[in-house]
Length: 194
Image (tube, rainbow, N blue to C red; front, side, top):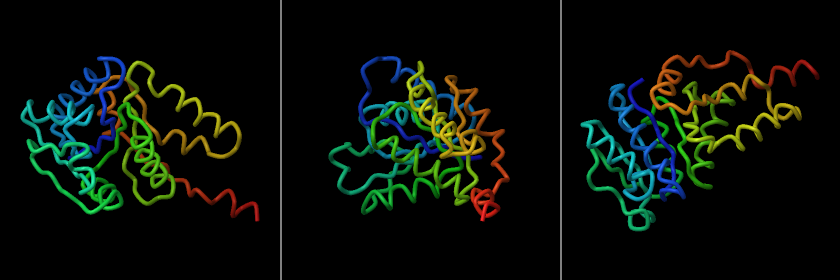
């Protein structure tokens, strides 16, 4: 593993602990010898984690769509900043450049990006780890909802377990490194029922 894609908010959130955790995760990436791949902005948690990585002497690679360069204020102090035509190109390039995916707190955009790569893992499009840095229980409601999908028969426990969760940055990176994708075929059960 050489690089980790981080999805997170373009705002700092309501409490200072979110920015503190983003800084800590940036430092943990550098300590682990991992490059940051992220959305390329210099505002919110996106900017906090990028600044943390750069200040610690690490590599930060941003990927930002043309439309958002001014809105998210593209970060000019990165190792690399790729300006791409649209969100589809952004997400594909971020995925191609990354060996793992981690969501820090964020809103709808963060969740959309997380769920895309989480779904890709379930479908077998990639075998990279997908994770949540669960800062102060931020993702507890989401984890409960995903557990509910298992209980109601819409997702297997195997695919629930694909999502790695930890509140500690170094521990989460260790989980990413130790991750083993499930060997199961998502459709095996349905084929056997026919």
